[in-house]
Every structure is written in C-alpha cells, then in structure tokens.
Amino acid sequence: MLVLGVETSCDDTAAAVLLDGRTVLANLVSSQDGVHGPYGGVVPELASRQHVRHILPILDGALKKAAVTLNELDGIAVTRGPGLVGSLLVGLSVVKGISFRWKIPYVGINHLEAHLLAIFLEREVVFPYVALLASGGHTLLYLVSAFGDYLYLGGTRDDAAGEAYDKVAKMMGLGYPGGKVIDQLAHTGNPRAVSFPRSRMKKGFFDFSFSGLKTAVWHYLKARGENRWEAHKSDIAASFQEAVVDMLVAPTMRAARELGVSRIVLAGGVAANSRLRERMLEQAQEEGMEVYFPSPALCTDNGAMIALCGHHWLKRGRRDGFRLNADADLTL
Ligand code: KG4
Ligand code: ZN
Image (spheres, rainbow, N blue to C red):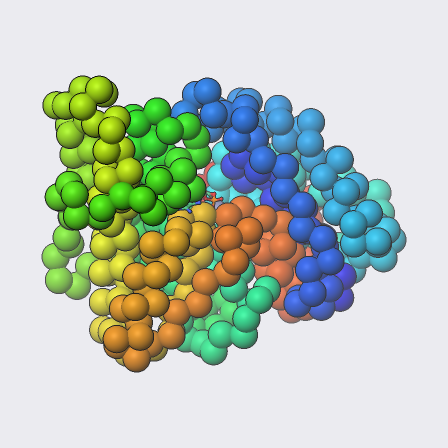
C-alpha cells in the first residue's frame, strides 16, 4: 500500500510517501524557523501563510523523490488536529482537493497518535509500552496497548517541555527554537552548577509542570544581569536541562514501574534531546526495561508518521468524507 502523509499542524510543512507502512520513500519538511525566529515563538497567522506558500512544492517534491505519481497512491493521510487551526486547514483543504479530483481515499489523522506510533517507522516494538510524548505543544504520558488503544496517564499542568526550552532560550537570547541550541550548549556545561527547582506531583499522578522552573531561570538571570551570567551560559543551559530531564524521566519511569510495563517509547521534538536519551537509557538499564526512540527527524513533526498512522487506518477500511473539519483541540 502506497500512502502520502501530509502534516501542517504547526510550523512545519511536511510530506512523505510510505510503502507498506514500513519503507519511507520520501520524507520532506519545509521548516519555518527563520520566519518565527525573530518573534521567539510561532506566530499563527504567519504560519498559515507559509504553509500556503510551501504545501504544493513540498507535495510535488515528495512525490518526485519517491518516484511515484498521484495515480499510484492508495490513500492520503493528513493531520486534522490538534494544532493551529489556520495551519491545519491548509493541509486538510489541499488533501481534500486532491482526494476529490483524483478519487484517492483520504483519512484525517490525530497528530498525537502519529507521534506515539512514529517508532514503528524504524523498529518493531511489542505492545504494551509507556509512551512519553514531549514536544513544543505537548507533554503527555500514555499507555499504548495496541494500535488504537491509548490510555491517558498524565500530562503537563502548564507549559510543555519544548515550550520551556524555547522560552528559556528566548530569555538567554539563544534564538528559536531553543531545544537544539540548549542541548548543544549543555554539552560544555556543568549540570550541577545551578540548583534549579524540580516540581513533583503527589503519589498516583503522572503529571508534569515546567512553569516553576522557567520562572526560576528568569529570576536567576534577572538577579545577575546579562554581563554576569553570559560567561557561564553553558552551565545555566546544562542545569536547566538537567532539571527538565529529571522531571520527564521520573513520572515516566514511575508509570512504567507501577503499571508493570517494561518498554518505554519516547516521541516528539524533545525526544531528540541527547541528555534525555542518555538518562532514559541509564535508568531503564538499571531497572531492566527497554527504551526506544525514533531518530531525531522522526521525533520532530514529519509526514512519515502521519502516513504510517494513515496506513493503519486505511488498512482497517476507514475513509473520511469531505465534511471532515480541522479540530485545533482534538484529543486522543
Ligand atoms: O514535535 P515538534 O517538532 O513540534 C511540536 O509538535 O511541537 O517539537 C518541537 C519542539 C520545540 O519546542 C523544540 O525546541 C524541541 O521540540 N526540541 C528539542 C530538541 N530538538 C527539538 N528540545 C530539546 N532538545 C532537543 N534536541
Ligand atoms: Zn508534534
């Protein structure tokens, strides 16, 4: 089965072609980082306009790279939520148009479900597993028992982990998005140089909270003034990152332990973080668990994970009609 996957939920215009749910023939992403960078975060109106500009060249590019024509496709999968409504509408409208004109079935995909399953593009993982989805918009913990069977375990009570990275990077003048820059800067810093606070949830909750940490970094920087922290910014980056990683690892491991699940899957942009990967591996090894994470390009938003999810739904006979709408607050 040949499936085209289209993703425009936030600030990446992405398209991929997937063969038989396994072989990625093309996976292209047009990033808008340069457009949103000066604002330190995604500007929704600018994002939609960029999607309009890039969607057709990206679709064309993906089909050319995969050496397939629209006629050969068995189906199209497109993100229908959650995300920015203007951004979602661009992908969904274009896919509906192609589906109608070329008589190709299409399905609307939940972006969160696609992240949770992205690992299958590279590895076979035995169900059940605990999945930590940490990105710029979400920090969620699910028990994944089968395809289509997702149990919500917990989520962030304020900022998403990636959002905390992006906001701290903005405070430190490191540019947008901040995750990758802080990750790199932290390599040369001491994670114990500054003792930033860690939020902890009551027993029985697998939730997260990053706003206290973000505020602590802000106070730390403000109390010193730029000329006094600039010289040890890698220590600040490493200390902040260590706190984020502590707060991601603890509830994830606790959930796996309490549910008696021995496999953990990381997903979302923050899953590309080198320290998170390292710490998860260490901790899991100590406790006899297995940790899986997709390669960085499949952690961040991409069309391949949408195509994969679409492959499963199309195989089960699902077809969406033209009344399907984008849903900015779609849940799983
Ligand atoms: O999944 P994604 O591409 O988009 C959303 O759905 O949000 O995730 C983007 C987020 C951004 O906040 C970015 O700063 C963060 O993932 N990120 C990272 C790293 N690479 C991307 N955070 C920490 N370490 C990284 N290496
Ligand atoms: Zn995402």
